[in-house]
Image 1 (cartoon, rainbow, N blue to C red):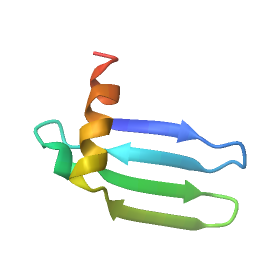
Image 2 (image 1 turned 90 degrees about the vertical axis):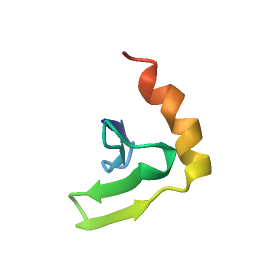
Image 3 (image 1 turned 135 degrees about the vertical axis):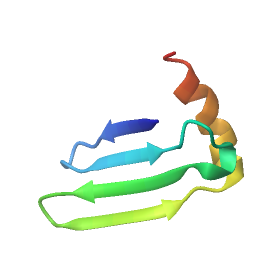
Image 4 (image 1 turned 180 degrees about the horizontal axis):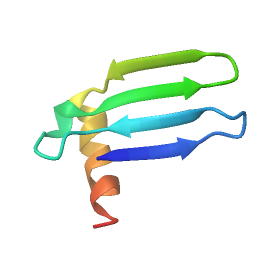
Length: 59
Protein backbone atom coordinates (compact mmCIF):
# COMPACT_ATOMS: atom_id res chain seq x y z
CA UNK A 1 0.00 0.00 0.00
CA UNK A 2 1.28 3.46 -0.79
CA UNK A 3 -0.10 6.81 0.28
CA UNK A 4 1.27 9.73 -1.74
CA UNK A 5 1.03 13.36 -0.66
CA UNK A 6 2.10 15.93 -3.27
CA UNK A 7 3.71 18.96 -1.65
CA UNK A 8 3.39 22.53 -2.96
CA UNK A 9 7.16 22.78 -3.54
CA UNK A 10 7.01 19.87 -6.01
CA UNK A 11 8.18 17.02 -3.78
CA UNK A 12 6.09 13.97 -2.91
CA UNK A 13 5.87 12.43 0.58
CA UNK A 14 5.06 8.72 0.51
CA UNK A 15 4.03 6.36 3.27
CA UNK A 16 4.48 2.73 2.21
CA UNK A 17 3.28 -0.47 3.85
CA UNK A 18 3.28 -4.14 2.83
CA UNK A 19 -0.25 -5.54 2.58
CA UNK A 20 0.41 -8.18 5.25
CA UNK A 21 2.42 -5.99 7.69
CA UNK A 22 1.52 -4.45 11.00
CA UNK A 23 1.78 -0.83 12.14
CA UNK A 24 5.54 -1.23 12.64
CA UNK A 25 6.02 -1.99 8.91
CA UNK A 26 5.32 1.51 7.57
CA UNK A 27 8.12 3.42 5.83
CA UNK A 28 8.27 7.12 5.03
CA UNK A 29 9.88 8.10 1.76
CA UNK A 30 10.34 11.46 0.14
CA UNK A 31 11.44 12.42 -3.34
CA UNK A 32 12.07 15.81 -4.87
CA UNK A 33 13.04 15.45 -8.49
CA UNK A 34 14.07 19.09 -8.81
CA UNK A 35 16.72 18.91 -6.08
CA UNK A 36 17.41 15.17 -6.22
CA UNK A 37 16.79 14.90 -2.46
CA UNK A 38 15.34 11.57 -1.28
CA UNK A 39 15.00 9.61 1.94
CA UNK A 40 13.57 6.25 2.94
CA UNK A 41 13.14 5.70 6.68
CA UNK A 42 11.12 3.38 8.92
CA UNK A 43 8.11 4.84 10.72
CA UNK A 44 7.60 4.08 14.41
CA UNK A 45 4.77 1.75 15.37
CA UNK A 46 3.02 4.70 17.08
CA UNK A 47 2.90 6.57 13.76
CA UNK A 48 1.93 3.37 11.97
CA UNK A 49 -1.08 2.91 14.24
CA UNK A 50 -2.25 6.37 13.15
CA UNK A 51 -1.59 5.63 9.44
CA UNK A 52 -3.49 2.30 9.41
CA UNK A 53 -7.03 3.81 9.63
CA UNK A 54 -6.15 6.44 7.02
CA UNK A 55 -4.89 3.78 4.64
CA UNK A 56 -7.91 1.56 5.22
CA UNK A 57 -10.47 4.34 4.77
CA UNK A 58 -10.30 4.04 0.99
CA UNK A 59 -11.05 0.32 0.85
